[in-house]
Amino acid sequence: MDSFGSVGGLLIGVLGLAVAAIGLDPTNHYASQIFSLGVAGIVAGGLLVWLGSRKPAKTILTQQYETKSAKSDSVHEAVKYKNLYEGSPVLQRTVNTDGLIIECNQAYVKTFGHIKEEIIGKSLFEHTADQSMEDMRKTFETWKQTGKVSNVEVWFKRKDDSTFPGLISANNIYDDKGRLIGSNTVIRDVSEVYQARKVLDLHERQKIQLEELKKMDAVKEEFYMMVAKECQIPIEPIKRYCEILKDSSGKLNAKQQEAIDEIHYNAARLEQLIHDIVDVQKLNSNRMEFKKEEFNLDEFMNSMVDTCSPMMTEKKIEFVNMTSYKSNITSDKARLKQVFYNLVQNAVDFVPQQNGKIEIGASTKGDSILFYVKDNGIGISEKRKESIFKKFYQVELSFKRKYGGTGFGLVICKGIVENLGGKIWFESKEGEGTTFYFTIPK
Image (cartoon, rainbow, N blue to C red):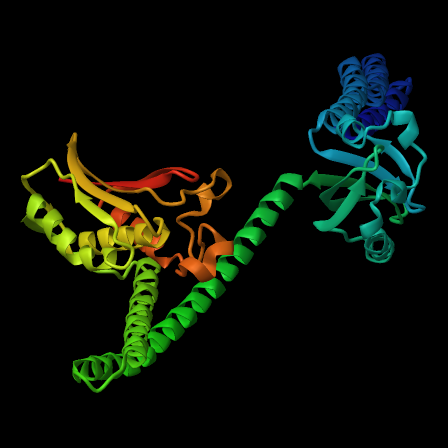
């Protein structure tokens, strides 16, 4: 519109001059009026030219305002960026292509334990842990060549020489000719992730180890069962032939009879050992079966006296039943008998050769029945009490040859009692004897 006004003004001015020239003709009756009209055209044309070349004040003010506003926005953006950089909880540093740190934020300062003056101008490799130094150099060279670094794991070193893992990513900085001159590097501390990963790795290793142990246990159990089965095969014939030989009255002298008795006794012990091994494996694998039934406790305890009395003969042990509970209970009768038999047999092994005494009994205790087997044997020393219910443990190892035993019996007792819903423990004083207690629900 400004150019159009100037051109229009010039045309009107030229036309005014032409009209004015006509008005100068003295022969023209209307010369004076025409001349006045020409002058007016010249004035109008000049005015239009002047107005066309003049910029409005409003436009000038608007341009000045826009220039100042642009400068203000630029400053505002710079301040905003600086605040975001400094206040970011993520570690940030700015490095040049020589690997020197030219800026960093407060999170970086705090994490590395330096003051800012100790960081600026230093090599980024001074903050790299030894185990990542080679990888960091390769990463830095790759960045200079390709301009790319994204989520590279690096171990960093603090001022106190402690280390931590981090992931680095770079936002590149270019000059006005598009050349790479540095980067804003973001470092994310992944210590918690690393620790979680260590826990997961440990868990995975433990899981693998557990699976291996389960496989080993399965192989071991299979081996035990196979050995037990194979050992049982010759035992029955041995026992049977011993009984046949003992029944042959008059044909064996005293020494031969003693030998037969010894063979029969040890065959029976071997048979019991095999049964114990099988039971221990069943307990370990939770495969032991339990069948509960109702039975009279007094009758059961009397039957235990009958069952265990033959064990008292050799040492002439006094065997007493002190049961005070006469009612019925519901439990696994066969397994309960096994517990009593093992506890009584254990007592027989450790009572003295003379004046030995074993007492059994049962009484009510709340919702449970309390059983006990008491002896006046050698007792158990304090240092060995905590190992009594461990497999293969025998109280007095120095007396192994004298007393025998593998320690399976007490392990089996504990396993059975706990599977029946009870608990087992003992009280003992060395040189005075031991009392084993156990409870089961009524």
